[in-house]
Length: 409
Image (cartoon, rainbow, N blue to C red; front, side, top):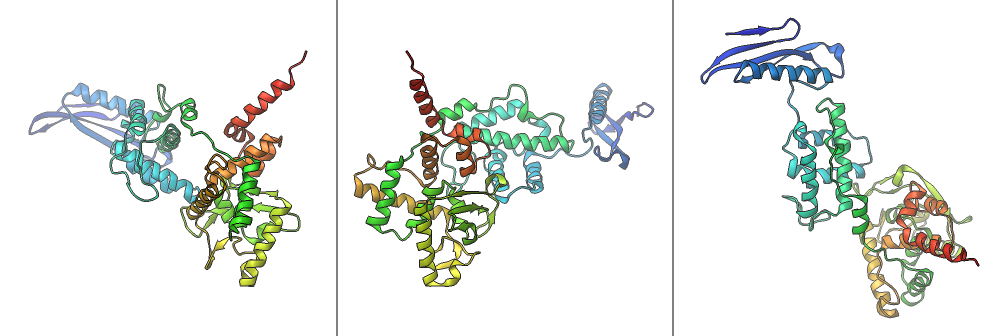
């Protein structure tokens, strides 16, 4: 058998097989590229038809070692590495759960069997196109996470961001050199396409909000009037209101403290508010009055229900539990339909969902001259820019008024 050795650089050697002569190489590589102090180990690869092919493969392997890649161990597939990466994340359960659904429903059924080093920019461009035009194979068809349509541009951009983070981790672990999710020529949906696909925001103005609340209180005499009152008076997120405890309210000063939100991934559990920041704000005197009456009603049933650590809006009949967010949204939707029936249809009271109460609050505040920073802090946005981006329809109206004010001569 022929041998071609290079001092300190491994060797290339031939060996017989049933199909004829083949060539293999061996080089020494770090046991762990991240910890060179652990020493080296031999790595051998064979099956080459010619000495020249074995030499070329050895040279490439040596270049990869010099760049810090892992050599001699199997490169994991996208599905294998994504599972390991997700388990390593020290993030909120809901955040990790969202990433897991993105990868397991939309990515792994399509490219999960590919090794990390085989994924290219073209691979991802094809993936992003498929996401927007096809339902993934094996996608759930029932339940909360059912997939009934291809993804919109915004969802695909979010998955592209997740893949970018995952491939960054693969680089850190020395499996690959470059991040295909950030490569030149990548064609993920543009921000312009996301904006173009965004549904038109439907909101209520002050008169419509007042009309609805008075209908709830006076006509329907709704037992949950205070719950809806707090949503309209605060602009807080659905699960933030449902996570309020009596210790979060100062009914003397009218101050509400948002310290937690429900964890949708773990029913019965709470977590820090979105962005991890607690916040507080004042609500109106009429809201304080409604909360005091609500507390009196709960106390008349059981004084323990108004202790500091108890839910402000517990599940009726199961007082230890908080209310279910989805059921709460459905309750609100039904009340809007009933109000429309009583008050003259959707021309009088447009159809909105519970989350759009939050949009309505922000629109009313900005439209009445409340500065965006105050609105952002009240709603719990991470920055004023987020507020301005969401409510461009209001700032456009403000710009039109500014133009009218500057009409001189």
